[in-house]
Length: 164
Image (cartoon, helix red, strand yellow):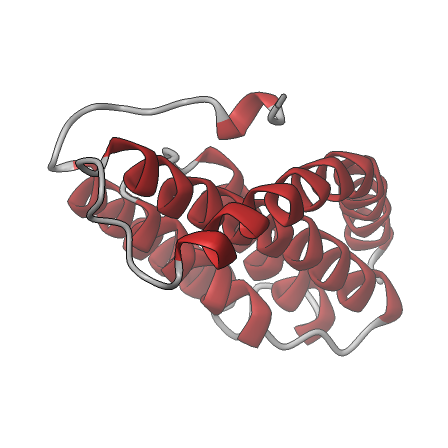
């Protein structure tokens, strides 16, 4: 089973979640500074900048701990998007990463099941094994959706440069 390149990273450090939260906070602060009134940029441009930062934070976040990436994804899914390019970028990237995170969660459940001592598998074991096939399908769909995310991001960047 193959995973998109950024899904294969794992930092190995327990402080990774703290680092991701600090990066996300710094990006939010930067977006707020860029959104200060009187900067000559429209509300749509500020929204696009904040959305681009949210997507970049998710994309650049380490694979583990999964909860940190899940929080970044939830933030992206709630992000306002009032223009078609912003909505397209948010929705395409959120879908691609939702599929990826759901698949990696299912894979982790199956790995835990396989690592469990013989005879300790409960009644959900067959369901967890069925999840493996679903996880593989989600990873493939995520990989197929990632180019749409990249295209939507490029269009959002172009629109922001043009002044939306």
